[in-house]
Image (cartoon, rainbow, N blue to C red; front, side):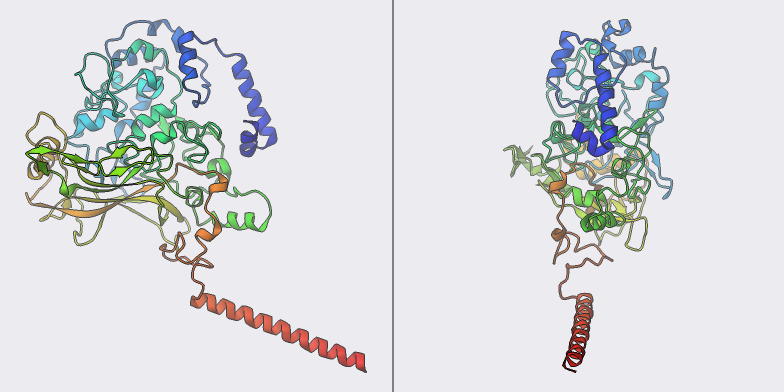
Length: 559
């Protein structure tokens, strides 16, 4: 542990941190037997720095009928918390981009996975940090008790949300066979026990939504999966128990319930290098801990690597591949093939076998065809942090691949660096007359329009468009799409980072990035030939000069 902190803070800083930890442990309140058992089963969770043991609070030592009653109890002490949460992106799902002017957020954008939240709320808002948001056309519920404190703060083993009840917790009663947002079979929870377990958010709290976005484990992001619950050091050096053992909030620092880090406005280039683990900041960046010159020493290789950081993101070298640790990610999704039936019934195929032996679906009547990948090499592109989304009212060109979110940046932009991305390949519905992407209603077990129930695209799209009250010609087809996801997790140990030759070689990693000259990438390019010619002339000049000197010296000696 001392060695880890020494690498981050220096020797004196490490001693200070270790001393602070020792004081916290020395004055820690003794655990109850149930808490001790829970802690023993969660050895990868960093120790809490909380100064309160909620199991001792009398107000929590009572039966609760639902999650809202728990929130009401929480607010008797944390009386500003609900209003803070309601001002966060986690609550509003609404974001006005300061540069592009676009109105983004989950409630507004169309994505390459399940398409859209609107008309599918009870399923999608199961991962909202509140209770009962069932209409994207309206803001989230106004009452303070609609905030779900437990989803972020309770011990995850003691609390679950149902997967299709607009954020409702898994307290009785609920239908037999119901599932949680992570896909497991729901079992009744004791809200009083869960309430008394609260503390700082752990990776299990964040992961139950962020690891399972898009319809399953690691489906969406590629670098966020259940493998990060307890990863090996080779999978993620920051989150491994024998690495830094970080929680998500170590980097994604929260202030007044607003969390640093957003895919809508990315800090693509941090030139300040401020703070350290847990320090106050508005961006979750590598430089915020490692500084702007992260490679120590004065050797030639260290100097050259530090020069690279001006134009190449840290992640490009230090995340050589994503979907590591045994959990695959979905790399392609073709909605156009959905709806096929066998003997009048939906069916599925499982033709991809994950490295842990688990079979993954490659076709579902409800969703179409899929492709999966593990240890995926990223797509590389110039990126300045600005992302423009193709929204429902934007005109598209169906003769080309439509970028659901186009990433901005170029070699001529000093604020751009080369970043790694997961590029999701899709095929999704659009209005063939208006050339707009469409909303579609996929979820609704009791409706006559939901695609997952009725397998009728015409009904599904019309229902989604009518729900949102936007123009629709009534004619549709499917268009090829790309969607980009910045890769920032699953950082490999330094010894596993990209080697120079992986880029500085013919057809290297960055060969497709425009506006870039990489020495060694094209051995016989014009630039290389000119450089070799100049070098040859210099050598010939030196050789000629030495020859003349030797001849003159010989003449003098003979004279």
